Image (tube, rainbow, N blue to C red):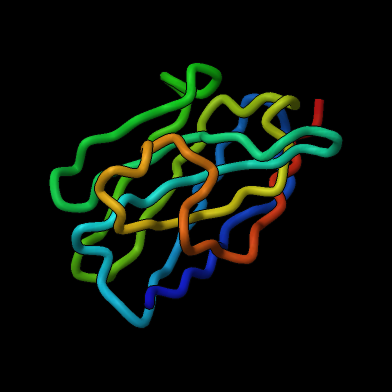
Length: 124
């Protein structure tokens, strides 16, 4: 089954940008949904963005629409989260995830495979 590793987190000032990467191995992401989730201190894990690998259809949480973009590199089996105009409330551990169940709600936090997480801290 697919294994995922995130990278690209760090410290950035409000208004800045970061790009997170999620590298998949063990299996191609063909027929998968690939997503990004985040968990801030004291809060539940929440959906951020997702992409259907085969079609390229994308989905975003209202809180990030217009600021974040999810994209994919099919040959490299990598997907990204470009985060622009970052706000302090975006501070969280960000996780990438993937799932091949076609009836799973794409915004679900019950994806089957998860990365280890990468910290994003936005200072004011």
